[in-house]
Amino acid sequence: MCRKFTEEHLKPVASKCDIAARFPYQQIQKLTDVGLMSACLNDEYGGLELDYLSLAIAIEELSKGCASTGMILSIHNFLYTNLVNERGTEKQKDIFLKQYGKGSIGCFALSEPGAGSDVANIKTTAVQDGNYWILNGKKSWVTSAIEGKAMAVFATFDKELRHKGHCTSGFLSFRAATACDVTLEEVRVPNDYLVGEIGEGFRIAMAQLDQGRIGIAAHAVGIAQTSLDTAIEYAKERVAFGKPLSRLPSVKDRLTEMSVLVETARLLTYRAATQVCTKNSAMAKYVAGRNATAVADHCVQILGGNGLSTRYNAERHYRTTLAKKSVTEVAASEKNSLEHVLKNHELKTLATTVASPQLYVAKGEARPVVTGIAQLPKREYSNLRERSLDAETVSGLGVQTVRSPEYITGTSANVA
Image (cartoon, rainbow, N blue to C red; front, side, top):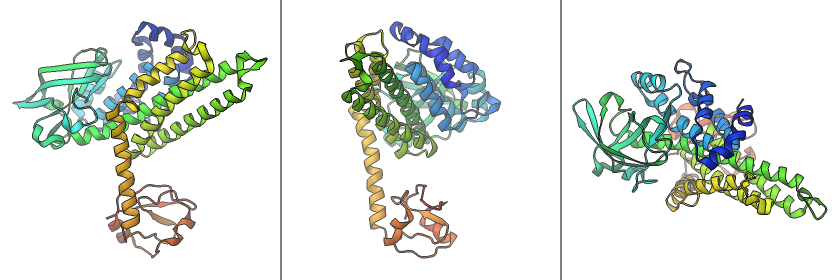
């Protein structure tokens, strides 16, 4: 369905929308009509009840045709509707998924001028006044703020507590500027719009960012794939030195590398969508963004001078990946943040695997998976001390039991 939608409704207008900087209103409305703007919601709220992997594939396919539409769909679903659906009360769902759901776009306001990746340092304040919360502050890079009807806002009720002092998301109904700063001055939000408990905001924000990274990674994969498709199509048609470019060794090398980069990013993204955790989502976002930029650059190089012409899509794909670079690769704070997440996880894994004397492998078909040992063939366990473990002991070690005749396929919680 998504591929057909892309061919019929996105590719014919993507370049025009890009040149005119025009919001794809009609395309978003059509996506609403087929249910993709409520992809993961329950049926009672008009949703398709899709899982994260299905949504990631949908974003990838739509991003092949129009990167802007794919990004709008990604943020709306992963960061707004999923937040309300998974964390909101029944009253909040009724208001923000039913009343605002049909044909409306939701926004996610977390970043601030001085707090992008450092979420614990947000300055937007929330002060309780009877049955209301008074919000004051400034949010940055709020996507679809003009077109949006509701916004999830993160604020702190005590700056000294940092992440422990965060109020969970409140929801506002107003219009602001697209992908720009949103200033909150004495904004009154009903207490009923507070999601979760006071102090849970940081934890909720981190969980949503794990989802959001999946969407950004899927978006990057879609751009990378369409860049590869553009390069292949041009290489087959363009003749140089008496033969198509696709037969030149240098072009073949580029196409091969592009294909590997696309598939690497895709596999990491799909893993992140099926095994949701900070490490997987951070890795997928980091690699997919970097690979998309490299693939789009190869595409421009294969097209030569035509790669810079608006008659071809290569320059649009490349510009899009440069914009994503600010989110996934170049921006030092975010790049370092993702690297920090991954390095910390690997260091903890190494320390747990090497230093802990409590690493055992249960005999029989059911095996506990220990941090840092996942995905190793059975024979790799020959150097580990084995003993039979009962269910209580396995549970006490904090390991996850999976069944796999050939490979250990799961990942693990930390081992005490």
